[in-house]
Every structure is written in C-alpha cells, then in structure tokens.
Amino acid sequence: MPDVDTLIQNYLEGSLTETEAAELHALIQASPDIGERLLQHLELDALLRATRPMVPKVISFPALLPKPRFGFAALAGAAAAAATVTFLISSILGRPLEPEKTTSSVAVLTRGVHLVWESPPIAPGTPLTPGWLRFASGIAQIEFYSGARVLIEGPAAIELLSSSEANCIRGKLSANVPPQAIGFRIRTPKGTIVDLGTEFGLEVDGGVAAVHVFKGEVELHRASAALQSLKEGQAMELALASKVVPANAASFASLGEIDARSALSERSQFEEWRSTGTRLNGQEGLRLRFDFQDDHEARTLRNAASGKGAIPDGSIVGASWTQGRWPGKQALEFRNVSDRVRLSVPGETKALSLAVWVRIHGLDRALNSLFMSEGWKDRRVHWQITRDGEVRLGVAGQGNQAHRDYDTPVFFTPERLGRWTHLAVVFDPERGEVRHYADGKRLATHRLHDASPLKIGTAELGNWNENRGPQNGNGNGVAIRHLSGAMDEFALWDRALGDLEVGALAR
Image 1 (cartoon, one colour):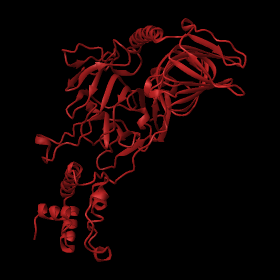
Image 2 (cartoon, helix red, strand yellow):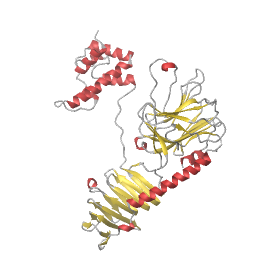
Image 3 (cartoon, helix red, strand yellow):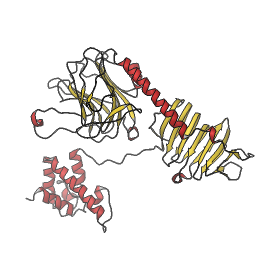
Image 4 (cartoon, helix red, strand yellow):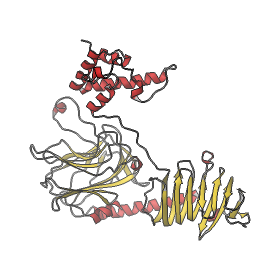
C-alpha cells in the first residue's frame, strides 16, 4: 500500500486512483493530522503555481485541483475524489471554506473633541457607513476612504454618501483633498462643490452656503447657473448673483487647532480617569484592579484594590508595554503565544463581575482569551471571544456535570477591531442570570443554569494554561488561545454590578 506522502503526491499530480482515494479518505478520518499535512501541501502547491511564469495565477483552492480522472458516481462511496477532497478535509477539520467578509463603510471618524451628539454617539476610530452624522458642538475629523480629510465644527449635520461624496446641510467644515482624491464632492442645499485637488472651507447656515478656497481650485455646480471655477484665495456664496470675495481661512478650524484641542481633551480625560480610579480602588467588593501604570522593569502588575481579601499582584510573562487610551496611559500588548499575565484568585465567590478595557487587533484563533482560569473543571471560569466575534463566559460544571457557555450575539465585527472597547460580564446568582456588557450597554442576558459558587484559582489575562500536569500530561501541547490585542485596565469584584455601575465604568 502506498505511504501517506505518496498518496498526497499522487493527489496533487492528478494521478490518484479510486482505490488510493478511498485509502486517503480513511487515513484522514482516522487522523486529522494527515488532513493538516494535505492542506499544507495544497498551500505550497498554490504558491508554486503562482510563481511559475507559464501558469496562470489562480487563488481559489478548487481551481488548483487537477481535473478528476473518473466520474463522481464511481466515487460516491469514496468521497475523497480529487474534485471533492478539499471540502471533505475542511469538514473533517472543522474548517469550512467561507466567503470573504465585506464592509459597507466609506470613512472613519479619526478624532473627536468635545462632541455633543444629536445622532447616536460614535467613538473615534469607528468606521462610518453611509448615513447622517449630527452633533450640537465640538469638532470631528473624518477621513474618507478616497483620501479626503474633513474637519467639521458643530452644530453640524452631514450625510456620508460614498467614499468620495457627502451632503452638508448645516455646519462649518474645512477639507484637505490630496491628488488621489480629486473629484471629491460635497453637496449643499444651494449647490455642489467638486474639488480639483485643493484645500477649501464650507459654511452652511440657515440655507446660506459659502465656500472659501485656501489652495488649488474647486468647481461650483448650481441649479440654473453655469459651472463656475473658484481658485486659491477666492470665496463666494452659492447664490445666483454672488460675487467673488477674498477667502477667510482664519474662520475655519485647522489641523493645528484640532491637534491642540485633542491634546488638551486627552490630558483632561487622563486626569479624570486617575481621580476616578483612586475612588474606585476602595469600592465595595472590588478584589482586584490593575490600572497598568506600573514600572516597566518590575514585570508585575500592582493590584490597586484596597478592600479586604485583596488578590496578590500579577506576574507579566512575555507581553510588552505600549500606549493605552491616552498619552501617558500605559497598556500591555499581547501578540505571541507566550504573552500573558499570571494571577491567583483564592477561594470561592458566589457572585462575580469582570471588567476590562481592551483593543482587539484580530480574532486569529477559535477562542481568544480575555481572562481564563487555569484548567477546565470544578466551576472554573473562562472569559473569551470566539473567532466569529461573540463574547463568551464559560463556566465549568461540578464533578462530571457539563459546562455551560453564555454567549453574546456577534459583537466584534471587522469594523470594531483596532479600537478601545469596554467589556464587562456579571455572574449574578441572586437574580439567576449572566449579563454581558459592551461600552456600558447591556449586550446579552442569560438565565443561570447553575448558580453554585465559582472557583477561579490560578488564572491568566490574555492567555490560558491547560494545567495537565508534568510535561502537559499527554505531550500533545496546550490549546493556543492567546489574545491578539492590548489591555490597559482590568478589575474583578466578588459581587454583581448593576447596569448603572457598569455604565459608569465605561465612561
């Protein structure tokens, strides 16, 4: 009988017989590792094909497969035929081929200073889909995917139409349009401004619209009027009989101004956080609070909680320091399989609340750890994020009882990655429920399956240790669940927080 490598080679060359296909199928079912080897060969084969000058570059796996040398009916019992083996392996390994994810976003809110929203509030760093943005005061900086950058001063109402077009019915804005974004346009009630590679200002107030060109040139398109060009240093109202007047750049917000306001706002938020944290450290039931404002050389996280039964400091393994939510605020970045913070929570707890500020870079694994007890038995706790973007609290059963997972709907979509998010989960035996929160708002509520006390024990932030004894027990290694992201605050209570308390933490 041919060995595994020969079967794989025959498959790649299109010379696999019906008998060999059945043998390969049986081997994959008996040992998924062989399926992994075949997938690795398929990936290598794809790379080799892509680098051969006489072979068309084909990306999708099905197109790389050799044409079957025998009919489907003849292989109905073998199922590992060349035309279907990729699907078979994916099914066995639990890795079905999925269509690419899509996004409808057209811009991103890069900065916001003292924004008072009239429409639903949006955090800086959020990708923006077509729709209205309305705020009563403050300054917003929006970067369109075309490359155009716009500063908007409130009160303002602007509708995003596409990656290169917007509609402004109220507000004052200044736009910087680089060469690659030429053609960027803004509609107003009085006409449309089409940019030709420039910097310009626009003010819309009470049905009056005026445009000021700081650099370059724009075109003015108005109903019942000829197209008109407006050049550097010129300004004009978008009315039929308007005259050209000198532009006034000083009346519009500049990048330098938003830089200064942003720095002042961030400093204010940081100082407010420090003051709030001092009060929070003495809060009832708080057993652990890492603020991540520690000496880089010590490689420990100080537990700032001052209540009784405080938990010892945490030990940093591998993770590196980076900037947190604001300049001066520290965070730990988790990137490698080794990165984690080790800690110990002794005894039992009837109720439990966990809260963290986290920035998720990617969901690279099936399960991505936030905070997880070592091992998985006897009421241990696992708080993590699934590859699909659900936040999960897993609680192990007692003895031989089954564990229970409490999941949220999908929350971490691609648009939410890369920005700071506040997450919290509450295990509340008195109300008989588990509650999940995101950015201070309740995300999901589940009825408790088992309200008996929890036993956290030794645990880790951003990773997991299976704890199967010397040499990890069976020698097969530990499941990889490390986090790809950063944390800059974590807290644990032995009581159930309410909605208002969680909301205050997120602010």
